[in-house]
Amino acid sequence: MSALLYAGVPSPEKIVMSNASVRVWDLPTRIFHWLLAASVLVAYITGGERGTAFVLHVGAGHLILLLLLFRILWGFIGSPYSRFADFVYSWRSTLTYLKDVVRLRPTHFVGHNPLGGLMVLAMFLLLLAIVGTGLSSAAARGYQAGAPLIAAMGSGSRAMGDIHETLGSLIMILAGIHVAAVFAHWLFARENLVRAMVTGRKRLARESTAVDRPFAGRARLAIMAVLVLVTAVGLFGQFDATVLSTRPTQPLSQTGEAASSDMADEQTQNPDSEIPE
Figure 1: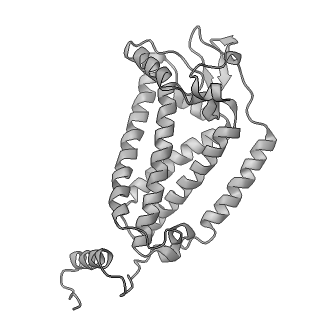
Figure 2 (figure 1 turned 45 degrees about the vertical axis):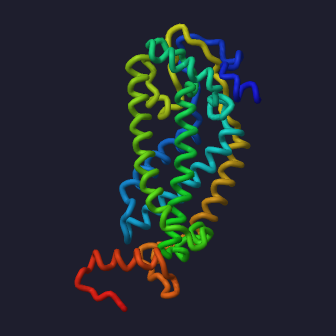
């Protein structure tokens, strides 16, 4: 497994068919991909808002975490092309592939190519950081009663709010690069990756070869379904939309930056209000 994980050389068992349609992305991976894209978009659109928009923002963040937890585990026990061992390459292999791309002669891969695999890992890590900073920021603003994960952050940190927004902008930049790369891959390599992520099958380029490797069996799918359901209940079971839609009042004992910031926010929105002495 370590050889597959770091060597950057496709397994010899892939070399069989030529110019044919081959199974690549299983149904759980495809559902994950499109749900994650939708969740990130919803979270970005509703960021920085209050009321219902904030409920949607926090809910999307929780769903993103659930999806990432699933995908990380699926990356070890899922279908062959969904595993990290299939698309995590050495730096040398990645640089070699990058040089081939610059020369417009990229090597064809059945699953993720080295740059695509690197993008996947980067987005996973960035999204985990976004969720963590978002939860900490929400805790600092007093939303602990709205969700157990926010309460787990304790008093949180208001400084995490600025980091959260910066990382949120960064993930959209990476998403744009991802979309551009998919389009460029279709234009130059003549591989329709969007269709592959919808149908689960990819038509190999000419002179490319691969094995039509089977997807994960029903037993693994059933186990993952149960784990996802249990985790979802844990994440959303005590999710209180009413609390999250209402701006909490910071306790009087909370002084310093947090209290001053809340007072400044209130004064900005209502300049006629009096600041208590």
